[in-house]
Amino acid sequence: MEKIAASTPSSNFTTSDIGSIWQRPKGEYYLAHHAEEVARLAAQHEVFLQSMGRLVVAPVDLTRPNLRILDAGAADGRWLLDLHSSLPSTLGHQYIGIDSLSKFFSTSLPNQIILKEQRIDATWPPGWQSSFDYVHQRLVLPGSEHITHQQTVTNLCQLVKPGGWIELIEQDHATPNPGGMAKAEQVVRELFTHSGHGYDYALKLGEFLQEAGMEDIKVEVFDIPLGALNPDPELAAKSTWQVRSALEGFMPTIRGIKCSLPTEELEDMPAFTERELKRVGGYQRLVAAYGRRPSTST
Image (cartoon, rainbow, N blue to C red; front, side, top):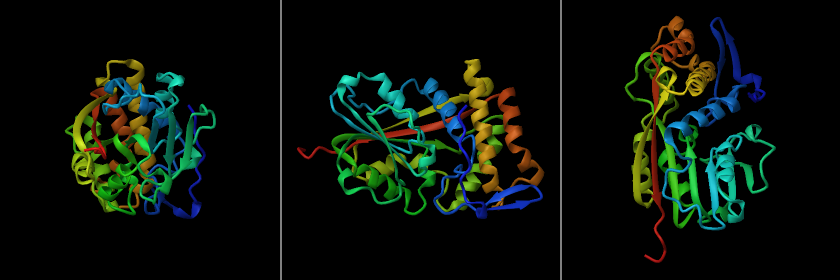
């Protein structure tokens, strides 16, 4: 699996008797320092795709020629690459991905796929306003801390052409879960609460789109089976690994906040979650909300 080199300045890390502590700068991607992150995101993508059954949830007509498509939070461009590979190149689509960390970017993508460094909570290039037929975002809102989640979504919606679609996918961290996922989600809720924006943003996606002026809004829920609950042995293993890998990546930040778990229990939490996922399994609940920007002709 491809790994990335940690590039977070060492001055942001301190050492304690229980492990490293990362004083995460405001708005920095929680797993920016994580050496396995690109490989983890690839495994996560495969697990999600198996359960969701499709790359695109919104009713976008991808057979129309010359569409302009944006993936906000593209990492190495895997979602864009899969979408590009699933469609005839003769359609002439343009695929653009943005991410706050250019070190994630793949250098072996087709010419139709362009990756640019851009934060979702920063000002968008003026020429991008009303220029995309389809905007996709998955598991990105926790990184929007310089403006509200509502403003982030509103700004994304303004990138959509009249009549175009926007699709947002986020995880519900309050989903009832067996085994280790319950403890892991508790810690993630506390982490996101500490950041100041809370953890219930996934349940507000429809409201965000409505407030931004979108129409034909729909919300769908996908329960992604993990570990022992995933019927595919290979994806059962990948789903378990990607969850543990994420939790290990969170640990340097989690150690720096007040957490309700005792220290020994907290330090064992990634391994405990892995053991429980192998034993009884669990779920990641994804909330997908999409809407259409009103046409100027109506």
